[in-house]
Image (tube, rainbow, N blue to C red; front, top):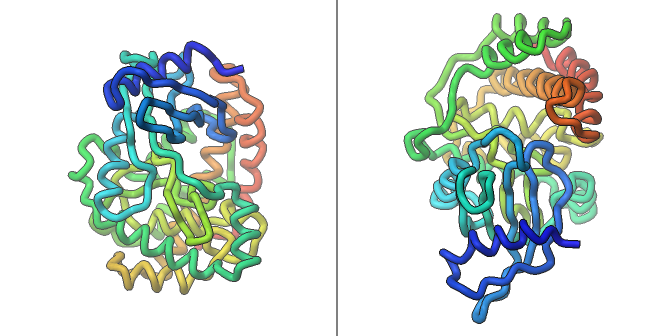
Length: 320
C-alpha cells in the first residue's frame, strides 16, 4: 500500500510547479541508497502524465545537501552532462519535513551486473568507456564557483580524520594513509568533482549513458579523482576490465583528453585509484560503525561494513 501522507506531501510539493489538481499515483520505493530514500511515482494532472522520482532524507536523519544537489544538477546539465531534469526541490522545513528533490524519470538500466552483461553481449564496453570520458570532461569544465557552497578540502586528510574519529584499528588503512601521503602527485586546479561516478550510478540504455545519478558526494577537487574512482576494483563487480568492469583504460583516458579533460599522468591516475580503495575501505568501516553504534540500524549498512576487508586487500595491491 502506498504511504498516504507521503503521497500528499509530494502532491503539495508539485502544486507550485503544475498548479492545482496534482495527483500522485503508483508510488513505490526503489532499492538502493543507504543514506537517502528514493521513490518512483506517476504524476497526473489535467494536461500532464509522467513518471517522476523523489529523493529525500529519511525522516529523522540529519539534514543533507539535497538543495545543493539540485543546483548542481542544473549546473551539470548546462555543461552538457546527462542528468535527470530537476522538477522541484525543498529544504527540511518545507512541505515534506525533510530535504527533497524531485526529478524526471529516465528509462534505462542501473544494476551493475546487468550493465556489464549488456555491454559484453553487445560489444559496447569501450564505447561506454568513451562516453564516460566525454561526460567527465564536460563535468570538469565546471569551475567550483559555478555551484556556491560546494564542499572541498584535502581528501587524504579528511579520510585520516574519519579513521581517527571512529577509533578502530585498521592497519591496512593506516598504512595506505602514510604511503599515499608520501607520494602525492602534484596538485592541480580544482574543478567540480562528482565524487561517486561509477557503475551503478549511471543509467545505461541501448544508446549508452542516459543519466548520471547520485550527486550527494560532489565536491571541489582534483578531476583525476573521478577517473580513479571509476577505475577502482570495487566498481568492476568481478570483471577484469579496469573501467567500471566494462571498458579499457585507453578508451576512457583517450576520450577524456580528446574532449578537453586535463592531461592524465599514468602515475597520478594510479595514485587516485589507490586512494579510491582507501576511501571505499573507510566508507565501509563507517557504514558498519553507523549500524553497530545504533545510530541507524540497517541490514544494508551492516552488509556494506563487512566489505571493509575487501577494500583493504585492494588497497594493499594498489599502493605504489
